[in-house]
Length: 90
Image (cartoon, rainbow, N blue to C red; front, top):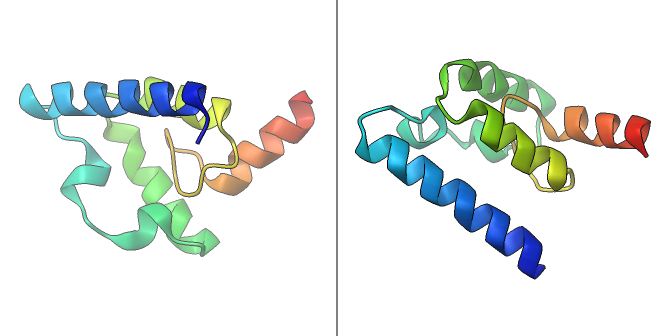
C-alpha cells in the first residue's frame, strides 16, 4: 500500500470512528454483511444502496474515487462504478 493510500485510509477510518463515537451510525460498520466486500455485483449493489444514509458518504466516495481499484463498496459506489468513472476521466 502506498503512503498516500495508507494516509487517506487512516483519515477515512478516523472519520468513521468519530461518527461512531458521536452516535451517527455507519452502515457498513452496523451491518457485518459481507456484501460490502463481495465480488458479486448484486451484493455490491445492495450494499451501495445502504450507503445513502451514511454521514461519511462524501468522504468515503472521495476515497473510492482516489483509489478506484480498492475492492468493495465506497461511498455508495461499487467497484464497477468507480472503475467505469476512472476510465471515462482518464
